[in-house]
Amino acid sequence: MSDNREEKDKLLDHEYDGIRELDNHMPRWWVLGFYFTIVFAIGYLVYYHLAGGPSSQQEYEAEMAALPKKAGAAVTPVADAGLKPLTDAAALAAGEKLYVAQTCSACHNANLGGLVGPNLTDEFWIHGCDYTTVMANVKKGFQQKGMMPYGNGKPVDETGLQQLVSYIFSKKGSNPAGAKAIDPEREKKCAAK
Image (tube, rainbow, N blue to C red; front, side):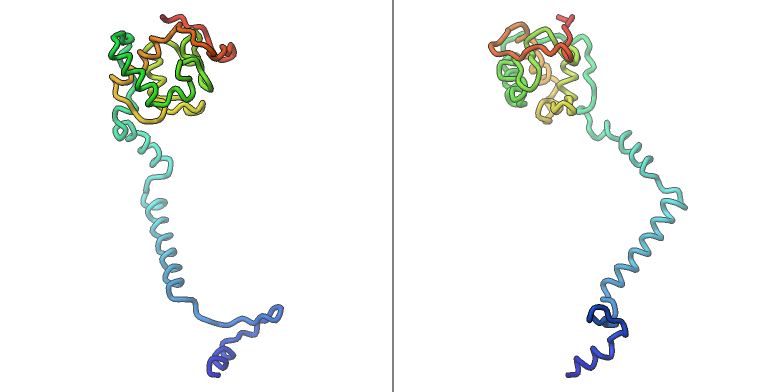
């Protein structure tokens, strides 16, 4: 019965659709949370707007400048323009294993004749066909086309990359059965040998 009396004492004169409102205090945790947001907002205002804290653009530029140091070799371009395809059987066998391990065959077919991705055995290429360009293309990928860096996004060392691209080059002109047709809109005849 005392609970009813306390409730009647707290009732406000406000009523809407038969629902009456009580005048209770806010929970302590809610009030403390509200005060915390006020203190945080004042600190934020002072640091970023009055004390010269970095803007979002400045933070972005600083992170982009630090990225090559963090990523290390994963972002460094292939420097050796004089590289030539490897021809020894062991390197080509290792390259073939990498071709399968990096899931290249999912798009370019096990015989390199092309499925979703282009045919890698003909003389028509989309993004350049010399050895170092192909190495750089495999390294960086073409994510807008669905090709992750290194095929599946897992980096390979420089030797492995050379073996992989050498294996691809060893299959040029092999004309596999069921090879994907040339897309003259995108693919250009390769002048490099």
